[in-house]
Image 1 (cartoon, each protein chain N blue to C red):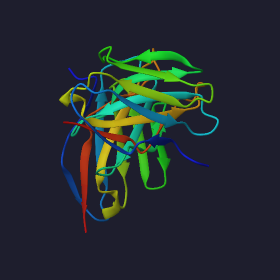
Image 2 (image 1 turned 135 degrees about the vertical axis):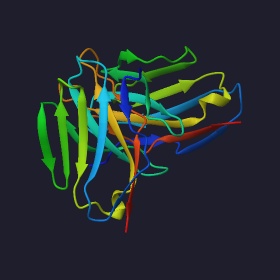
Image 3 (image 1 turned 90 degrees about the horizontal axis):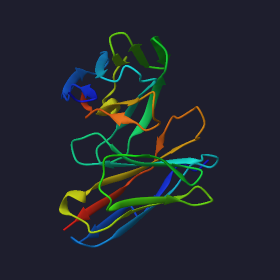
Image 4 (image 1 turned 45 degrees about the vertical axis):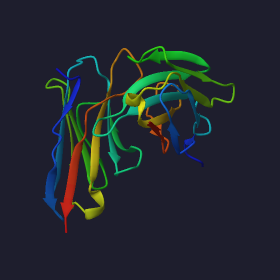
Amino acid sequence: QKEVEQNSGPLSVPEGAIASLNCTYSDRGSQSFFWYRQYSGKSPELIMFIYSNGDKEDGRFTAQLNKASQYVSLLIRDSQPSDSATYLCAVMPGSARQLTFGSGTQLTVLP
Amino acid sequence: DAGVTQSPTHLIKTRGQQVTLRCSPISGHKSVSWYQQVLGQGPQFIFQYYEKEERGRGNFPDRFSARQFPNYSSELNVNALLLGDSALYLCASSPGTRQETQYFGPGTRLLVL
């Protein structure tokens, strides 16, 4: 079982729709959770981080964390073509300070 | 403020050669982490350094080594290059305190022929 799992996609949504990206993790001791966006040929760019159960909103982005279910998600409202990228879920175990990444979900927003 | 910088941006080497990649963290950040990203996968953790001390090591062979300098910049060295070492090498900067959010540099793309 992979430590961090994401649906590789590709996920396609029409412009203006809500894109929902999901991630599960295996280490129950994980404390910190991150979403990065990576455009083709570029490096990962931090979008959001979340530490506590519940929702965290930042502009069009909402991160949701459920530690009991070991599940973290990212919602992108009013999706734009410029949101088309690979979204990486990353988890920081409680015992260490390095990131464990999923394989990423490729999102395409159709004009 | 300048972000994380890495050099070189691209590099072509042949099997068996050695390579050194360089990274300068965000001003005020004391921790540097190195990741390897092969095509189609998420980044894989290689090393983390804080205050010149190794704070973590991923599952990579001893051909990989790193160090951090007093100004918090860092170098990643890879010896005896293999074709499978072709990847994007990412440096991430973090404050080194309880706030461990990591910010990535542009990466060095290494091609081993």
